[in-house]
Length: 398
Image (cartoon, rainbow, N blue to C red):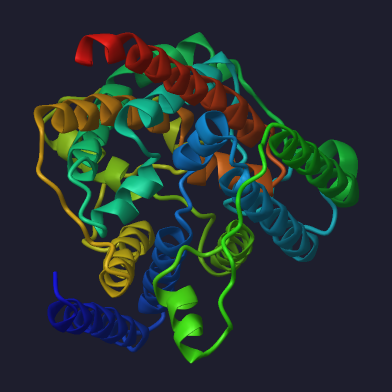
């Protein structure tokens, strides 16, 4: 696509987002949270697209290329958000007494069901090539897999609603909710969280190999424009911005998450068609990216995701990174199959790498760490399996 078409189209998207923000802001008290959600989602989409902030891709870079920069970006985001969350908690809930939890924070139940769902979600990432948040921003880059992955995720949510009650009775109903400040206080919880993140950063760096650094040209106006709008942002910059957006969004609206709207659409449609159980045990009282029967057209999470997709599209256009390619049958299979696992895992775990892992760890929830562990195991297994398959098929292809 030529610059003569890309840049005006990007400007049009920005204008639409800006006008929508203004209209929502002027619609009264109910519209202001929606406006902020749209604005925050747009900022999130730009940061994800410019910094290539994808949990799966960053992990794959470390496993396949021994490049730790993406993983360090995730760890920086978690550290910045953890500091921000604890500052907010100290204001809203000065004493983290047992039996009390901070408002709306994603502090979920810990059980074998969470571990299994996290593992399945990790496999889904490996098959489809991205986590759910990355599939949303890659819609803006013209990914041919992302639409099928999102459709597959919707099907996976439906499957998750069908299997929810048996799994709830099996383990979730008896699961424990562990919030670290209950046991360590805010300071102890933050020290432990930062210590664990530091240990993971050391491990990532120790597994890496030296990366060649290209010579840096003189920093003039053209180079500044290229660094901001065209070249990939540094992992540290992306991580800091993700952490700040997560903190501000929690303070103003709710913890970050990208699956609640998709799940709510599926739940509403399934309930209307009587596909799901009439009662989903405990689902509406557990913490996480909760789904609801939709009664209004717009929701905070829905506008957040729309802003994410729209802004990533504009960002990709400016950087000339909107590059759809020819669709293949394998793309469809990967998208639908991987998406099915992503959707089932996200529904059963009450969120994805953003809603459970990112927002959970930042909040000091044990559920976030459990999701991280088993999701990484599932994704790594998928990466290594793909590597073995590629090696075995190479001679035949030759």
